[in-house]
Image: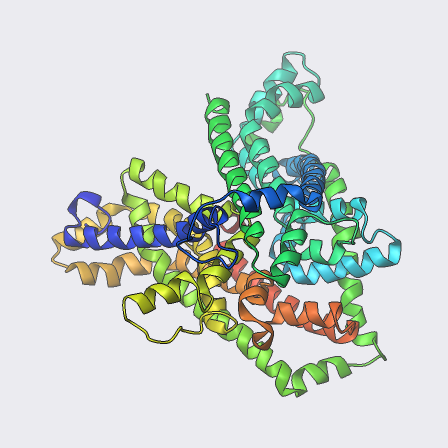
Length: 266
Length: 286
């Protein structure tokens, strides 16, 4: 009975109430930040004494914010493209390959996801200092591709495991070249996995703070580094304005993802 | 399909080899394995060869305190997260889909919102003059503001917030896989709801609780951003201490020794997790 929604009785009301509270707890900071960004108090009094757009004006008046956002977008796009391309190739070997140590290889390629980022951050920071990639865009992209790779591999291998290889074989028997069969039969069939991989890989780089803090130079800052730097100085409402725009971006990304998934799965 | 190997038309190639994985393998070895190993070597070579960095780490009260803080926070965060996540996952597993998708949407929104944004919100909410203290004082529950930030209380609240989705989502999977029939059978045989929970639902969901809990614990141990911003300088956790040793003190030997300890503990727990649930199920969560 405990797993029958309609027969839980009073327990259902209690559990639903608790779930509602937890949902409110999860929503609270997100809503709070957006409200705060329109509040007129510099000291973040809440509820605000009045409403204003001046924090957004201040945000857009400072070119450093926009520049940081563009840097982040550039790095995240390159890292996502690389991670998906490399991850796609690797996924074929991981799912269909027959060689010794396949599971070990899978574990190795997914390790960047489990190793505490701070360990990787100082390791790659020291390494790039030595080989001259410190504080460069290339260095950022490489480090973020490493971190994004597991997020690309997991959805693609999952999609590939659900795809019947004999369909691809059928295309080859019907005269397609192996490459053509992969390109025109297999890839379209696993496009939802590839699409999820691209989103996850992009977010892994876009939101990444720790490696970025170490890698950043005065001339090369990503958005999280800029927010981090401001946070360490004060809790200025300008950060709330920047954060609200990030929430807006997350929401649009969620909606676009849902729409594309629906379209792709038709 | 492999059963048909004998009838494979000659035009079809055999199974894929390791070739496709080579770019990924090169990337990971060159820019992940090599840098990490090089870093760990520095822990036994700087400033002079030997194990003195580890002796320092284990011999000083200051560092012992950081280790203690780290394990304490990770344990409390894991316990609270499990207790809060279970009822939510339970409801999500059996809720009507329309209602469930709203709750799922909120969980995903929270999870996908920039980490710094969420932490910033908690910094403002928890401060002395923040909304939470003001509300509690207005309704007369407290007369003095509670110290909710720059201490381990703040870190715990912020971390539970971050970790909840990582616990709820895998648990929903576990609970969905339990056949409702087993619980109906228990009720028919006269088990009270409490007995059915304690002797059937809880044991059956234990693998999910263990897997999610271990993941939350491991992530909490190495977390950097939230503890650093909500904990203040006097309540450092391990990851924050490592960053400080490298960034401000430039003590690479000591910093990489601490990093090695963190890596060792993390990898040991990760291996335990793999044995417990298998690689597939663990990574299937995303």
